[in-house]
Length: 482
Ligand SMILES: Nc1ncnc2c1ncn2[C@@H]1O[C@H](COP(=O)(O)OP(=O)(O)OP(=O)(O)O)[C@@H](O)[C@H]1O
Image 1: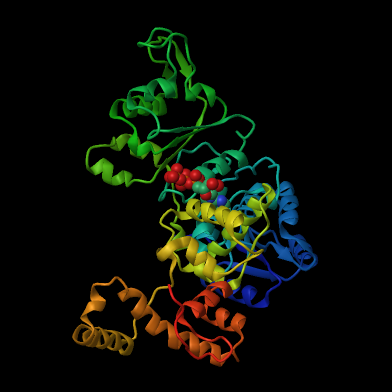
Image 2: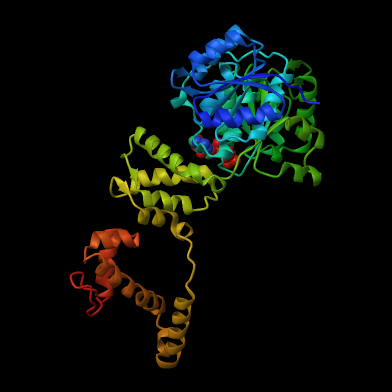
């Protein structure tokens, strides 16, 4: 049977108060709603709530500050925060000030109901210690629902030492998430040490991880500390864990079980004081099924799984990420560039097989290569190559016309199929009426016609020249040679 209790709700949005109160009353709770801090303070003296639900931004103050005071005064009172500012920073700040849970708006009523159940059942847990840095310094960009799920998990794990396994395609930000978990938690003053299993020879992995004694193997001329020792007190990030050889897996498992390790060729045991965050872009469960990864190690690592979505599964984040990377480029001394709305649309159309890393590289190249301060869609498409082109649905009328034209050519001018001009001829035949129509529509203003076509003005000028279209009249003369 689920527990019921007294819930005090603080939100300035009347609709949210009503919906939340109705849902919680349906669950059998007693609910009081308030719209401001002033009201909330009064209610707090009248009722002793079992759970508080509070919005972050309120007309008479910041909910996070108030919650910080509330949890200091009543450490065992669970507070659930609601926020429309769906950044990692808000999720972390909410946890930091001692909030029991954090729900990004819009939220699901079932999720709220579960959070209230959890809050009622909870045993008191202390808040995190303070974190340096503010919103601007947090590294993860993107407010898509998929990333908010990620932020909520991060916020929950920063204060403990649970092992985290981050999965996601290459370039989705796995290392950045590992670094954020380290930077926001109590180990942040100790080192963050990364080791990529795919980047070092297999036979050296154990010595790299655990260190080795002098003479442990050919070439080991001096004692060397391994990554476990280097990361003491901090976080050890094991990247591409799926590429770890079997023997090293067995050794790692023993360390995770016993909390101790021995160096290669050494007899001494050393306590392993590290938080482990592992990452993989391979299907680790599949590797387990195929016998290439130890099942027991998989379960040891997969205590808190974080699945990072591919960039194409969170296209809402592309604009913010692109602007962020242009800002970063400008800060590093490259020319400052801005994206036209159509350019952003073109970025959003693309599938980003290389994920955020690919977007970062493209934006850096744009900062270096784009001609003007404002980047247009044409430049974006040119940079992305044909893969970045707008998906084309062929109109059956056009398809039939092109086929018919090819059949006529085959009958009447068969030489065209051998002289290497076919592509330009057919494209020109489609392009000419298109450009002429756009020029006419825009009163022969080339800039506006170019914009409507989604091409650069200089490109349009070149095409007019090549196709022999008179820009003033929009009519064709003789095509220019070449
Ligand atoms: N949400 C994000 N906000 C800002 N920058 C990001 C974000 N995600 C990724 N990046 C940037 O994209 C690049 C690739 O990220 P990262 O190296 O963390 O990916 P990865 O998943 O670990 O890649 P791989 O699997 O190839 O090692 C980095 O420069 C990182 O700073």
